[in-house]
Image 1 (tube, rainbow over the protein chains, first blue to last red):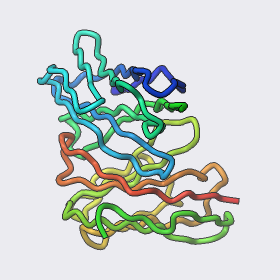
Image 2 (image 1 turned 90 degrees about the horizontal axis):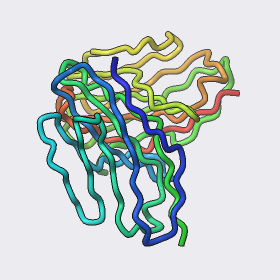
Image 3 (image 1 turned 135 degrees about the vertical axis):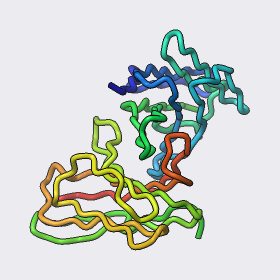
Length: 116
Length: 114
């Protein structure tokens, strides 16, 4: 069965602190895709990154970085030097190649509050 | 306009009303999705349309009726809803329906059923 777990419901940090959002997934498929989305107060989910199961290279984009480890089925997201504008709900999601409908399985989301 | 738009942004309806949610994508995509986001629950996929054909109905009650007249528009017709149907309804689109394709989301319709 497919499942995505984001154990951290809420995280609060002070601006400029680094913060890591955890994501653990379960799948039986050997080919799958992992995503992170950001949901600001306005409501729409904003796509941040996609990784496929064959590419375990970590990725950095500005203050954002992602650590994909198949051995622990984790796809963690780190924000360096957090800013107030980073305050949002962050979702990790899984899509399996075997699903021909593009179905995304979402985690519960982690609410990040960055205080000035 | 760009991206994915949804109207209305907020909707309050009684259990006996009939209303429709509208979604429009301006990205040239050919797959569209409806998701439900309730408090304290993960986003739940409701329906998937690809090239205007419904390819997934995720065990959604019949009081929710989707319609996809063309690849740019998606509707969700609502009738005799229950208070537990109150939620944020999000529309998304993607270039192709495969799992590889990232989905682009609209801002959602906040639905309250009285």
